[in-house]
Image (cartoon, rainbow over all chains, first blue to last red; front, top):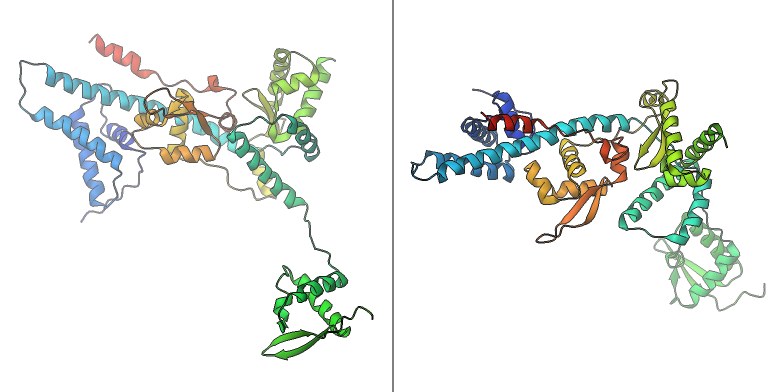
Length: 247
Length: 182
């Protein structure tokens, strides 16, 4: 039993063909298409056997190569040049495509080296003070396309991250017990009796506000504006009818 | 202003502008000199920063100038800070970018013809990374979208302009013409 693992990943059929040409030491410029076709087909079969999913691009190329090969096998009408021309054309086309692809493959390696070097290099963000001034000024002539907008948004987010790393802002809504008492008075006017503690804290977004609400309720109980009862783990309130304003 | 003070001014501006970079137009406005003069001064400065005693260098792309640290510094920063992994590009991304850079403006079909594979998703990814952008539409059937590379691409590949791209290998012309006379 043979067990072969082919780990090379090909970017596409052309990449695969170039690999096969290199492996079989074929001359790209005097390409023996028949050998290449056989190798290509063999490789696709191997891919099938290893249950690799074969991308449609490979199949399309396979079809073209098979067509070429089968035409070659057919008996030729010697009186016309058509068959020969077809063969030469297909071959030249294939060679040209391979050469063209090879060029970009080669050049992308050179570019990759540049990219890797640049990736090691870091720039520092623009001074925040300057940015503030510059942005005020720039508002007067906003002329940009959607890509500038994307860029600007990206920069905004980057800046947001740099700023939030250095400055931590803790926001806390200041709400006094007196203010909350007044709010509660307005809220309970519209609430059907009896109302629960949950009803009164429904608009609270933070724990802080719940605490203030609780203290405000205690105050209102002290002023006898509310009467309460505890039932089923819930505190229930009723207006006492006494306005409590004249303490 | 002597050349020395102009260099100092330019250096100061570039320092403050940081990663946004300053354009040649802005810099020549600042020192009230013709842009060609300023370009020459900046070129001299660029050469000076190449000195191995300097930890940063002057990067130029599409007439935008900015300071970036030299590659070797990264290892030392890594000792004090954990830097995120450097950005990487896949082989298919590189190939697609190369084709666009050399052939721009170019349609998706033209790119796919060269690569032999579909690259719809790849183009979307590259656009999201701000490495390529749409450049209008070709006046052919279906008016397909044309793509071109961005300044961000030039920056990331250390290219002053597209003229700086390495030459495409031209081996086939000599070889094919040889064959013609066989």
